[in-house]
Image (cartoon, rainbow, N blue to C red; front, top):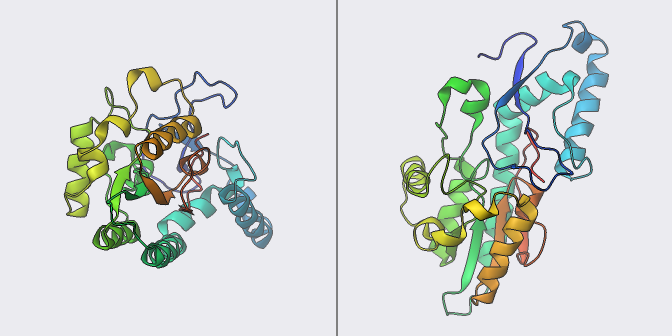
Length: 258
């Protein structure tokens, strides 16, 4: 299923946002948006301005909840995520996070932590969106890997807090192996050392992401950890209870997880 002409593979979660029994954690199946080829050519500058405004509103969480990309913005989003703008935005987030990480004074007890989401934060699923046949191939996001290595070097303990399931999809072992192979590092303590609190268990499948991740952060705080930084591509990665001292939102105009 190739992106061509007026077609674009985009993410569409099969979840009713008002239904807390839905499961928003599966890797999204691609959805095809189709629109008349002439539509996107009419008032090209206006369409571009509209789509830039739409992406800004989506990234600032002013559209929440939203379920799919506007048809007239399909090419715009494709060009954004496949081009230099997306990479530049990722680099900016990484740089700002690194500056903050370097400014924190540690307590010296090993309880200062940094939380990372996985999908579209440490690993990119763009190959999946471009061609569903690529399956589980998920390369590392270079700016996030740079930040990860920086916070490790500074002495942070790393926790990976993801909506991936333990029992289905990518297993804990497979996920940690993928992270190691894509990033070239084996010090993912969140997966390897504290895995019991990082991936969805069967009795947590009904929970929305904001609640699930808040509860996991609550557990970290109760165990004495100080959440200094948190990096994620969804607002549900960052908001809720036991928020980090600083949160860093990576761009993602492809899908929304409540």
